[in-house]
Image (cartoon, rainbow, N blue to C red; front, side, top):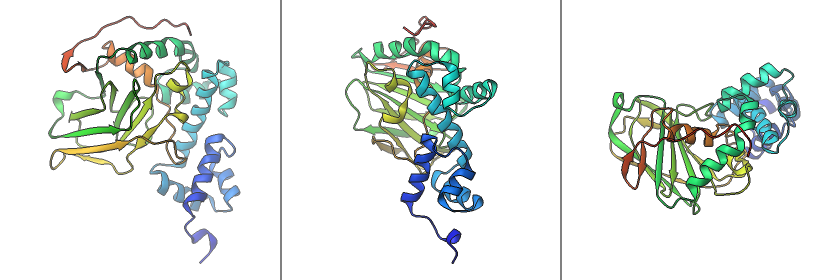
Length: 288
């Protein structure tokens, strides 16, 4: 059996993905050279571990590094360079695909969006906010999926997502923000297979915790949930630290929370179990 026919140890795969996250190797060819494997074999190997193509992981990792630069207060130009994009237009397209907005807009709204979420984290009243990329009335489910998060910190915001792909770009098909509660029943969603993910955003004074998710605890269910369910089902998601094979989380969670809460998209807001429609003013474009 040749070397390229042997399965690689998981630790080797993790080290390759860690290098990709850091930007030490920014293409499949560079990773294949460092691992002394053929491009074809490495591509197949990493897709088996990730569940999606390596190119998507690399694209998300570049945007993730660009977000880090913006959160640290640097310019969009520096963010573009650190993300490995030669063209400003290509960077803007890639960034918007993952975050829902241009880098300049993202940078200008960091402070106001974080402050908006902080205010709700300081409120002791339980709050559940749903973002749906579909009409709930068109896709009722015969049996509910109860998603239960374990190990959450006090005053932390939990963001739960159900999406057809393990790597979410832009917005999930179903996104739920949980404040003061750790459980949600999913009673409507189109039939199909969905990966469940949760990430915790702790109450913090640093912008990094709200936009750069590498230090935030999370959980990704590697086996998709298939709807319709055969019976009522409970899915428990225990929070844990990042592992190298986790897809980068590039979605703008505070922005989705804000849009859902003020009713810019279809939304259910539950406050102490009582459905309400909330409204509010958009955060200012300033970074304060």
